[in-house]
Structure formats: C-alpha cells, structure tokens
Length: 150
Image 1: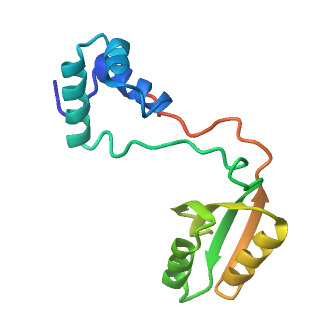
Image 2 (image 1 turned 180 degrees about the vertical axis):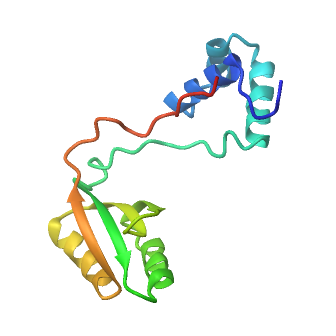
C-alpha cells in the first residue's frame, strides 16, 4: 500500500478521533476492529506520516464569553502586506486566518464579546488595510473531515 493512501481501518480511526480526540485507546481499537496495541501502532504511523498533526479540543465559544463571530476580508494597502499579516497573527481575537488569492489577501475569523470590541480591532487594521466584515449568524457546516480519497 502506498504511504499516502489511507485504508478503511485508518479512516475509522481518524473518524473516531475527530469525534472525540480523548477517546480511550480501547474504544478506538473497538471502533476500528483492532487490538489496543495495533490501534496504538496505527495512530503512531499516522502521526509519523503527518496525517494526524495534533489532538485537539472543540470549544463552545459562547460558553467562553464570545457570543459574536465575524468573517473579515482584508486587503492590505500597498506596502503593508507583511505588517498586516503580523498584526493579524498578534491579535488573539483572530482564531483563524487564511492567506488567499483574489482581491483580498486574507480572510479571517474573529471572536468578540461585543460590536464595540469588533470596531476596536478593525480600527487597528484600518490604517494599514481595507476590510469587509460579515457577522456569522450560524454555522450549518462545522469544520469536518474532508472526503477520504478513493
């Protein structure tokens, strides 16, 4: 089997871990139809190959006091690209950001407690970039696994 291809057992392990990254090894093994040592070895190999890069937690942002999320498209002014990128990286309210092609250079996701907090963050960017902001009403598709290649 080529190193870049996942088999059905790997897929079952990844799907189980995506639902609960803290799932006990015994439960993971059962989900994949393996013994615990075999499941541990499979997970280790997936990590070595870079297929699994982290075990994480899914947070309820509202429970943490962030009732608002915004998607911000950011177009740096001429000569400001690197400064804007650094500003985004240094602003904790940006929980995600992608550098993209097209008219905008960055698309970021912000979490804020209020519209005033959002305005303060955007005001700090405004001297170096143009922004276009959309408030998130809901997320009908949360971050999920991509389709496994066949």
